[in-house]
Length: 77
Image (cartoon, rainbow, N blue to C red; front, side, top):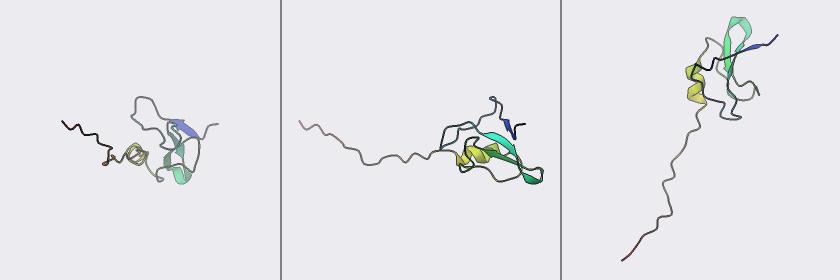
């Protein structure tokens, strides 16, 4: 018996920022739920409680810091 439920493809979920897997819902102790990476428990997972896809999406975003210093080339006439 599986200990997790796959999240339907119709629900917008970001992939795990560490390994790229689609998250699953796992039953945690005391009848609560956790949204987590199916590959590794060390990757991000939500706190036990209700199924919180928004928390998963917020915390599995790779923040891109724009590079402010570019190697500019100037054309002088």
